[in-house]
Every structure is written in structure tokens, then in C-alpha cells.
Length: 141
Image (cartoon, rainbow, N blue to C red; front, side, top):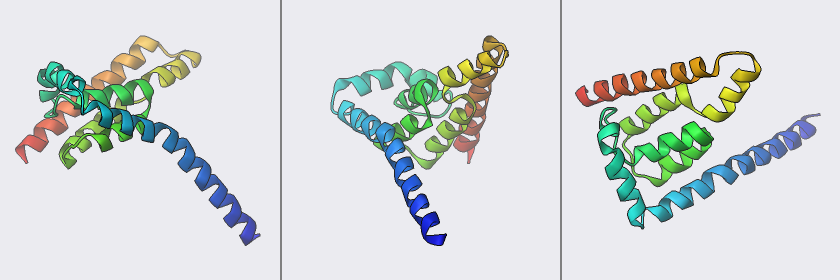
């Protein structure tokens, strides 16, 4: 019984690791590759004023887009590829805790009969408000 549980646990662990690696590793390599091109700097400069509201660098916009459009694992891959401070990672994590995987979770909300517009507005509003609060508190501390 114990041996079967251990075998099943190892099997599930390997499956989960493989599932996560299929998302995190490619995103990490793509973002790392893009850092050697002018594209990351261009994106960072465009979004620098908006991200400054949250006390984040312009590159953080890429992480927020990955987390909101794809999923949290894609955002984690991006976070690992871009040099961010612990405060910046905390701000992004707080924001994405409210607004991650918008496409999938909004589709689920629609199936449940909940207003898609309300769901998106509430989740994005909470992400923005939490990002501003944590970003400002972090700047003070």
C-alpha cells in the first residue's frame, strides 16, 4: 500500500513538473532571448509611465500581460527572466492574484451566467488598486 502511494506520488509529481515546465521554460527562454534585442527596451520605454504608477519598471508590463492573457505560470517564467526586486515581484503577484488568466476565467464566469463585463471590470480594478497601494507602500518603506 505504501509503495503504491509512493509510486503514484512520484508519477503525479513528474506529470505536474512536466506540465509546468511546458509553460515556464519556453516563456523564460523567449523573454531572455528578447532581452538581447531592442524589443524589450522598446516595450519598457512605452510602458514605463504606466508601470511607474505601480512602482514597477516598464518591463513588468510583459509579465502582467503574460499573467492576464495566458496564466500565472507564464508570468513566473517571465519574472525569472527579468531582473526584478522582491518588492516588484510582490507587486506583480498581488496584481495577478486578482486578474490572472482573464480569458479562461471569464469564459467560466460566462458559463455560470455571471456578467462578463462586471467580472473583468472588478478583477482589473482590484488589480490596479492593489498594485497602486502595494507599490506606494513599498516606496515608503
